Amino acid sequence: MMQTVEIQPARWPQALAEFSALHEGWLISVDILAPAIGAQPEIHELPLTGVVAERQKTGDSITISASKSGAGQITHTIHSPTRVWIERTHDGVDAAMQIESAEGTTTILRLKTPARPETVDGMPKR
Image (cartoon, rainbow, N blue to C red; front, side, top):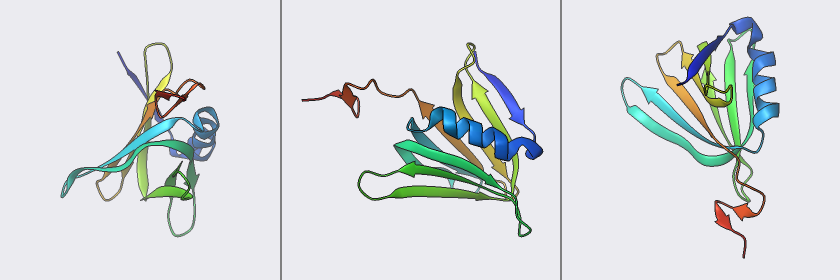
């Protein structure tokens, strides 16, 4: 049983900074749901670098960043976000974040529990 908590826009910068600090390095997958294109995978099981909310005169944005092996990082920016939710398991562990934007797309960031140190990509080290 999941519980969903909506984060108010005034708290986005702080709440997303806390979320990033708590989950940095966790594997994430990001899917974009848009009426015209359906579901598009954007990031697949890469370590989270951070989620940042920026409030600017040109409009709000939320950027999700993940590390790519040897190739810097991949980022996905949501322009004009309107609502942010965090989904938690019944024992209070964050499982996913959902971000809606003014243009009607929904971005879903799913967290995968970090691998134990003795594994790499889920496989035992050789």
